[in-house]
Image (cartoon, rainbow, N blue to C red):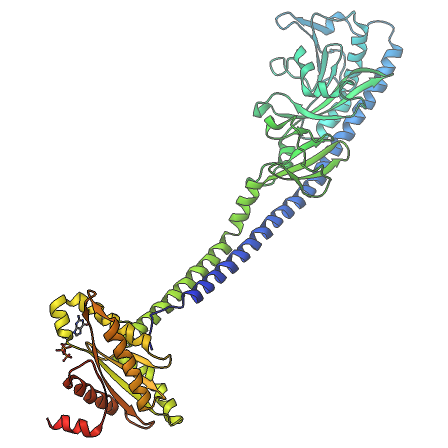
Length: 523
Ligand SMILES: Nc1nc2c(ncn2[C@@H]2O[C@H](COP(=O)(O)OP(=O)(O)OP(=O)(O)O)[C@@H](O)[C@H]2O)c(=O)[nH]1
């Protein structure tokens, strides 16, 4: 039988694509699992930090409310009980270079605060004096708060009347009050036009320079329906920054107001921007945004939230990094499978090369014998007859001599093809020598073997031409055999018949006949 060297390409492709598919599926699942885990870790971290912020900010809020209450009560008291100016001229010092009046009450023991008033001294402004008196009266409460909350830098009252009272005292080179304060977020967000419910406001105080960053809680003061000013607690951002950081791989969390506006972020550019989920969004679930996911947890419900945004890019990077080991192992698995398959294929090819003639792709002598061994066992069991055809190209030397070895090789390949095409499926075809081919016809009686030989011979004689003009012919020796007959002996018989065929003029099939063979042997 004609034998193609083959490594089962479809099988190999199937195995390879299956391994790749499984690797991709596992990799894909791990990747999705990693993304969910990142979201779940981030969520519990946010919930956790929301609680810590709740207690941190809750304390601030309680103190701010207490200050506001004290202020409002004291203000009412001083407003009702003053008869004249509450301070004397000597309590005020006008600094013309800054156009500021400094107020540091000398008589009050507890005072650690200082007021800065826009413009020249203001002893004649009773409203301002009442507010100054009230602010000054806050100093002892302020001291308690400053001691209680370590991160507090200062507490101050900013009046609509154009002054600020601040405790503890800050030298004028550290803090200089000016009209710009009324443009700062803490003021703009606190005034009734922008804050009709008079809620405490969380905002950024100070400027954008890193070492001046301050986080503030401001509370508007309203007495008898009249807005007087704002009391602010100003603190360092360290504590809040720590609570807003997850880890360096992800952006930090931010504080949002109830309109999803960023009221505090370590990224100052982001303050005032809106973080809106694309589909409305609710609390305690991850919401889709334009470029990632947003999780929001309440610190003060209805007022202040902690929110965290995971960009698709950061999740992908982290998930990739986390599933890298698994991916590497999977890829290693794929590469190993490829190598094993390659080795298997190479071994198979090598084995084939040992059994197959590289020129004609027919079995060589060794291959023919190995492949036919089980067939002979089968023939023996079934007591079937069989036959050998020994086919030899006529005058092949002349072909080589006339046309060269390359054409000679092509003729060999074509003869092999013709023999293969003319045979039934169960027959075995091999290249027995230089220009000799052997065909095993299992279960074939002599007459049928003769017919098979003639089919081959005629097919070649009629159809195989060199350069479209010179016919190639073959001579065939046919050796019939019984089930138990010896292979080598039968090959020998076929050889004798072939010799006879050559003797009789070539392009002929001769069935082995012991008598004729004897005669030839005696010649
Ligand atoms: N091109 C080519 N020639 C081969 C190959 N193997 C053997 N031969 C040639 O086959 C020729 C066989 O020649 P001979 O044994 O004299 O037989 P012949 O010329 O075919 O004459 P008859 O068999 O008597 O008809 C030799 O010239 C070998 O060199 C091969 O693989 N390729």
